[in-house]
Image 1 (cartoon, rainbow, N blue to C red):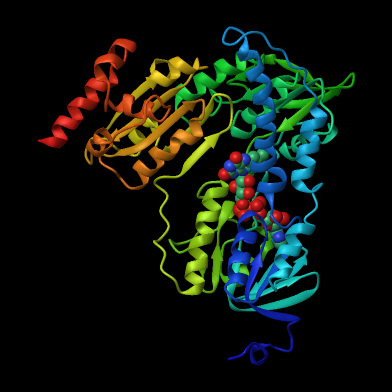
Image 2: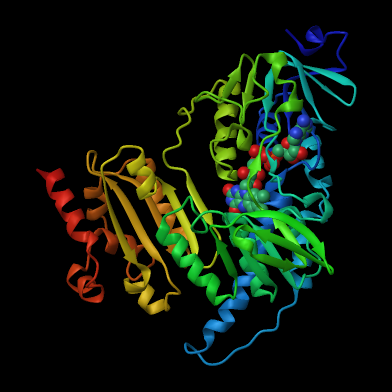
Length: 486
Ligand SMILES: Cc1cc2nc3c(=O)[nH]c(=O)nc-3n(C[C@H](O)[C@H](O)[C@H](O)COP(=O)(O)OP(=O)(O)OC[C@H]3O[C@@H](n4cnc5c(N)ncnc54)[C@H](O)[C@@H]3O)c2cc1C
C-alpha cells in the first residue's frame, strides 16, 4: 500500500518510522533510514545530535586534549630541556563553542531535512501502538517507532541542594570562565576527566567519592594509577564519604561530608550518575513498564511489537559506541538485512584521564563474581620496552583469562594511549581468540601495543624478565597455556 492510502484522517502525518529522540543514536539511525529511502519523522525535545556532540564525548575530549598539552610541557623538563606554558581557558571555550555551533542544532536539522526527513522539535509521547503525539499533533508509523530518549543527570537527595546553584557536567562543558575552586560529587569517569582538565588549568579541584576508590567499576590497579596522577595534579580526593548537606556560606558552597568534613568551593558539580526518565513517554500505551529503570530489549533491540529502543535508555552501557552499535542492528532489522544479534561481552570503555584507562569485558573481580575461574596477569607499562623509552607516567596492562576456555574475558590498559591499545584486546575478547593464538602472533617493536605481547610472554622473554623481575603473572599464564596444549 502506498503512503497516501495509509494516511488516517485523524493523524497530522504518517511515516514509515517515527524516531523518538533524535540524539546521538537517533540521528544516526534516522539518517541511515532516510538514505535507504524510508520516510522518517524525527521528534527531538532539545538538540538534534543529543548528548555526545553537545554535552558529552566530543566537547569533553576536546577539553582533555587542551589540558594534556599543558601537562606535556611539564614533562619536557628532564627529557628535552626546559619549557613552561601559560594557560588560557578562552581558547578552550572558543574551540568547544565552534564544535557545538554555540549549542545550536541548525546543522543537524538541515542534515535531517535535506535527506527528506521531517523534524519536529518538542517532547514526544507514545499514544498507542505506532502512534506518537507531539506539540498537540499526532503521527502514525507504518513500520514502527524507535525510542532513543537517553538519560538525564541524577540529582541526589542532599539537603540544601535547592538553595545553592549547583552544576551538572553540562555546565562544565559550557564553561566560559574558570572558577577558583570546584567540588565534584561522584568519582566516576566524567568527574575524573573533567576534574583533571580543570585542575590542569589551575582550578582547585576536589572529588568526593562514596566508595573506596575513584573509577570503582574498573580494576583497582587502574584507580590507583589515576589517583596517583591526581595527587600530581593537586586534585584532592575524599574517599568513603558522601555529601549529606550543602549550604551557602560567605559566597561559597559548603558541602558537608560524612565524618564532619566540610568543603568550601565556588562551584559544586553533581556527577553522581545518569538515569532514564520513562514516566512521560506513554510507554503503557504500548504495554511497556514506565516504572522500570530501562527499556528492556531483545537481541534485535525490539521492545514490543513495532517498537525498538536503543542507546542509554536500554541500560546496556551508557556509551556512544554501544548506542551506535545498537542503531546498526535496528537499521538492519527494519531494512530486512542480516546482522548478528546484539551481544555485550566485549564492550570497550575508555576513561580519558591522563593516564588513559581502557577496559573491555570483565574486570578480574567481576569475572570471579560471575563464577569464572580466571588467571589475571598485570604488567607495569614502565617495565615494557616502549614504556621505558617513553618515560611512562604510570600505567598497566592487565589481562583476565578464563581457565576453562583459554580465552581473554577482560583486559585493562592504563597509560599513554591506553584507549588505543585497547583495540587489539577488544578484538581478542570479542572474537574469543585463544591465548595460544595471541601468544603466537608478531607484535611491532617497540610499541605500546607490543606491551600486550610482553604481558602475554609472547616475545623477548629473556630480556623482559630481566627488565621486570617482579612480573609473576607470567608463570601462571604459562601453566594455563600448558594445560590448554595438553
Ligand atoms: C560529560 C559526558 C562525557 C561523555 N563521554 C563519553 C565518551 O567519551 N565516550 C562515550 O562513548 N560516551 C560518552 N558519554 C556518553 C554518551 O554521550 C551517551 O552514551 C550517548 O550520547 C547516548 O546516546 P543516546 O542516543 O542514547 O542518547 P542522547 O544522545 O542523550 O539522545 C537522547 C535525545 O532524546 C531527546 N529526548 C528525550 N526525551 C524526549 C522526548 N520525550 N521526546 C523527544 N525527544 C526526547 C533528548 O533531548 C536527547 O537529545 C559521555 C556523556 C557525558 C555526559
